Length: 406
Image 1 (cartoon, rainbow, N blue to C red):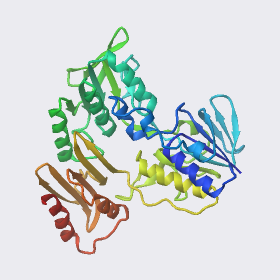
Image 2: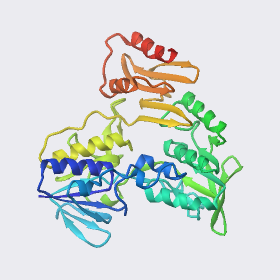
Image 3: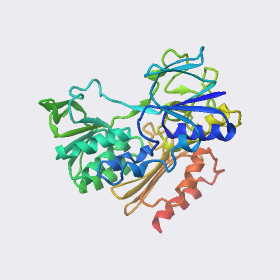
Image 4: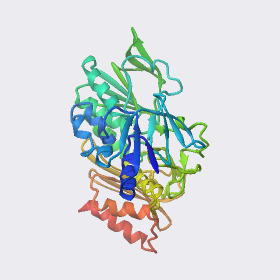
């Protein structure tokens, strides 16, 4: 049996390890389009200001070497399930017995065909190569504008600020971190970032990236003003990387549809990581996610099942983040915003600390911890496992909120 894995992601690495454990002698090929070893993608913003080096964010062990797989630095451009082959950009065709799709996500490059997005000095930040390009361009810059105030955008903006640039963040929603925080938590974080010198514009959109002699000079705003920019970083989101799957017959909705064994709708093809669709345990919705932990879990299950083992995807959340922004810990899990007021919210503040718990009757479905984060992992597991509190909700809430008073 020949195994082929498409992608250089952590889902691919987890899948590779699981296959090798089950099939010590199997032939395994990994197709990765980045010409660098596997690395920790969440750490790439720290390359921008030199907080980390490229070497420091590499996996301690290179998975293809550690698990005895052949690595091809190439790109899959098509799959022919009837022939059990994949086509590569180099022109090669590879046969497979079982195939794992773990090609991750792709950055959203343009905002409604944003004019000027092809100018010199416009970057995305999805790969190590992107980060190195930005780092190398910094000597040409004194100002930067980051389009997108999500987690990647804010992390990039912080790094550029540390590198000595004057930084503006443009977010079209009413507050930054719209998928990771509610308005109160986001405003508290934004206040700290502004104290450090960052300009944050919310309810704002770019109309055009202005350029002089082909090089970025500013960003024209919907409000009528401009934002100074020797550099622009597009951080408007990531979508599942499924373009290469066109014509392969796979069921694709928001992402590649899989069952709990990570099987796709096409025999002998499995999928894992950022390109799959799964059920969010917080509210039962079908969703996709770029979470590192979800990619690890799904890759491991896929690799196990496609090599003869038995496993099932554990309950997952699309929001499960623990980070630090402006020196402030922020943890969020599950459903964190409820604009239609369908659920019951409890909030508490104490100094710089803020906590929010969101309940569907006596089941915890979402949480935000800003500042103190003791026992947060325990509470997140209640959300993930859809635990009922059996009438003890109010006592639970009092105990959780009391912790930030101590």
